[in-house]
Every structure is written in C-alpha cells, then in structure tokens.
Length: 128
Image 1 (tube, rainbow, N blue to C red):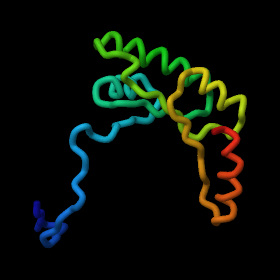
Image 2 (image 1 turned 45 degrees about the horizontal axis):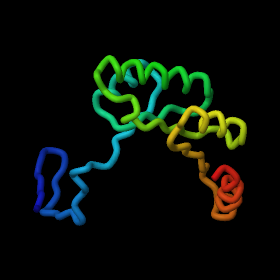
Image 3 (image 1 turned 180 degrees about the horizontal axis):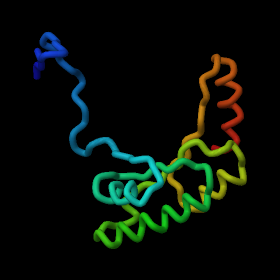
Image 4 (image 1 turned 120 degrees about the horizontal axis):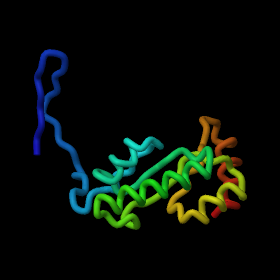
C-alpha cells in the first residue's frame, strides 16, 4: 500500500512500509501508571499493566485492585500480564516481585558508555 500526504504543515511523497506490522494477533498492548483511572483503561483496552517498581506494597495493592476491576468487567484477571519497570537492582526486592507473580521485571539501563552498560548487564545476570 502506498501513502502520501499534503497538508498545511506537512507534506510527504508516496512512501511504503515493509514488513507490515502483525495485525492478528497484535503485539501486546501494555499501559504504565498507577492510578485507578489507568487500571480501568488497562482492563478495557490492554493486555498488560506496567507500574513503576518503587514500592512493592503499591504494586501489590494495584494488582489486587486490577483483579477486582477485571472481575467487575467479566474479564479473567489472569489474562492481564503484570510487569514492573525500574526496580532497584536488589535481590530481595526482585524476589518480592517474583513472589507476586510479576511476569516481567524491566531493569533500568541509564545512558552510559559501552563498558558501563556491559558492567551493569553483567551485574544484572544474577537476577536471571
């Protein structure tokens, strides 16, 4: 399929995009945030939830609330993946999230030179 556009502020000549994105099944849609409004949007539109991992108790209470909202909406709570973003690289904390059945723990990689990133990744291997 070819696309082009000419408008008041932007114009582009005919373009093509390959490969086409997967349509069915679509890539998972995961939403971050911790508010009740966010959790309701996760239930309605998403495949997963991605809160910040600052406080395990907040994540746990969010999981409980997410599951309540899912049941109210006749959605299987187990159909929603639970992921956390940027916990401290601490074994006790990581294990707390594992005990909550968090599916994916995304560790932070700050902008560093290659050697710094390599050292940090080597340190993260203890959590695998």
